[in-house]
View (cartoon, rainbow, N blue to C red):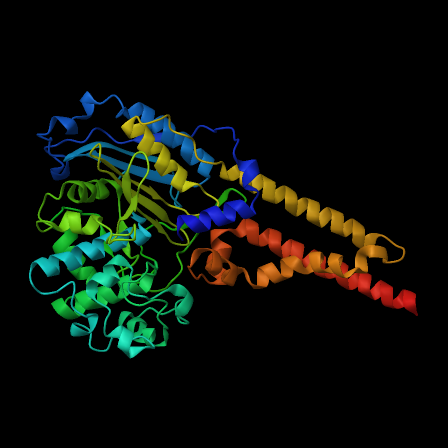
Length: 495
């Protein structure tokens, strides 16, 4: 779920009240300093700018203090971090616990969700460098069966359009986008029901199917399953020994469950099943992500062909989305990608002006949790551009929503037990107000789609923001009961 959804939900949950919060200390479990001899990814940098000792901003103790406080504000149970600069690993640390009660460390495996798109894009550029894929060729050259509801438009969609999310495919125009499909080829075949939202190359629409098509393209071009290709050509060469990819969200025995937040309390639960190939199936650790960040920020190593880094990280004209990286033109300037599943979330960030890069991996997800604020604060801390701002407090947001739940139930229960004539309770404006939560609850998915361009099922939204859904359910139930009671009293009075 993108940051726009988090902002939308935060607004629903009284954004004005969540600007002030009291930090609660959290226990940090920093890893030992990286040993260059034992860790190929932490090769000492020859560039003096990559020496963290020369930069007072790279203070591990200050980083741990900020992140421990940030995790407490988020309410998520665990987080790990990887920070690199140039070819050096600056810091690795873990905070909190996983669903099995074990401390989160730099070696704790987490689903990195949509960070997977950068891995898939890298794999496609490898094939392009080898002359096996032409980025500007129609997708149909490699997948003849690929089509949308408009075959003429489908024929003009290129591999580059998929990578840049400018194919014209959009969640809102793909009826099967929320189907619980687990087979990659069937998923791509179901795109025949998708109506193009725009002409190819005309506009950016973030949608997982673009990268699912790319996963199938990799499979058909190489004859190797997408997950196996990443293992052989990306994870293996980078010595990412605890990283792998799965085509679906099925449970893995060596992977602890993630969490959802219910009124600021983490609840462990299995990840939703469904297709993740190409778009969200990578599982990794912060230690392994450090190796990945070094490759992505320097262009060095055995994975990226010459010139691939610039191509991956340069958006087309009129867009901020490149190929698995999104450009944020702010201070400090950064390239990033976020990832969200129902029970995990992650962020990867490159800071080109300073050479820093970092990844934050969480074993939980909540639309109310200000993980974007943590990334912004850490970027400011590393670059020294300004004092880092703590993220919003999820606990305070939940307290506001919980208070509203209690007030709604109390006031409407009192109104239900009052005797006497219905009075103004039966006026049409008041009835409309009482029944408004019913309409919001019934149309929550379309409302979110209209605001964000992304489509989610009712279950996905309920897991992402259970506090908000509980508030709406209580308001809808009590409003309906009160309306029915007052209209019934009115009919009896008229008799």
